[in-house]
Image (cartoon, rainbow, N blue to C red; front, side, top):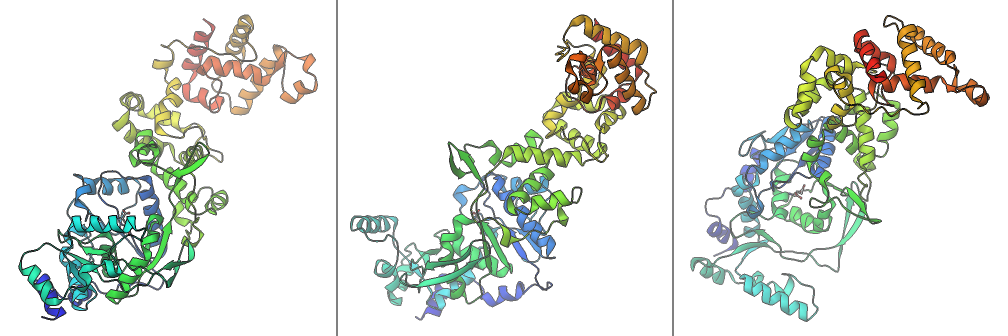
Length: 550
Ligand code: GLU
């Protein structure tokens, strides 16, 4: 028997790799087009880091007229959960990160380079394993778990580098006859790669993000096909990224140390490896130390968190672009209303070490993102959120849609739109006071500020209602009248005036308008009071000011 025959014995009905190379030809794309993929395992948890990778992949594919692939890596079937693939697809959809090719539900793919789920590609990996066996670059290993454990123990106690390599790789040197006998005897085996590496030598690698790195060559005879016939990650990655014609492998930097194995495998298969870009994970600060954002400890690590809180996916995406490229922030300052699609992301500008997750910054970005939405967009997003998470908000929004749109339109669509909403879960509290059926029927705690003498407050409100309030006034007239009111009661018309002569006044116009604002809304901070009055209308303003006086 020769090695070719051995490969036939092990994989009798498996096609030649040339079949797949023809089936998945080089892509006909323009120069510079990037073919990238997000390749998660369907473990039931979508980490925000996966969205981070996808934002980067999707952006680069769009920018270069390339292809963004969703590939499901389910070769470790022990870790799989039910509907894990659907969970990933839904998460990408929520963030508008729909892949050009890949899985579209648990078992179906679209795209010419599929299937895109590794468990459906078994014969493809086996074709490549078969080729390696025929070329003496891989071999069956019959070692049992006990043998491997005993070997490891020996290595540990002798303080020798652990693993299956060199003289320790016992099955590497089995004769063909012996192999044939064992297989025909029905002995169980796996397939190992016969590493040609020498750790005394170095490989030079250029990572698109991390730069130039030297690694010692790998000499471990890693497993490529497991006893269930499925490949290990290392082998699947090589075969898939070759046949899917991936140009850039963008993945977490926990894979950086596996690179020497991957490069070797590409060489063994006889093809040029893609470019690699290893992304640093998103970090979190705890007790002064940095650690990875953790699935167990940090709620914001899970994508559901964003939906539940009502943080718009546009905001999360924009925040992630901020982390990705530090020049994004400046670009946003110069292009306040532009779509993020107009920003040019550069892999080479990604940070080498992990960025810290900053919730304050994310919410700040979210406020800006929401401020750019029209009132109709706010309404639609808020209703979608409310449908799922807040029955009462839904009621509030739907009771009188026309009115709600007016409320949402306050200080929106202008040069400097309101920036007081960071997430949909804040919206109810943010607008509830605008609804008479809630406001007039509730106990308001009027927390008046600089002016807190009850009589004085009452006098101001009463006088305002009787002599200064007219709903048909334009904004300037309205404001002049508040100034007149202030002056009449002994307050300066202008803050400046008061500051120059604090003894001469009881306070200033701001103190007086605060009284009216609190009486009207129960709050010291609101959007523009003139607009609020216009939306409320005359009857409501009168009822509210009367309520405050009583
Ligand atoms: N399935 C691997 C993971 O989830 C993919 C790494 C890669 O993108 O190649 O970490």
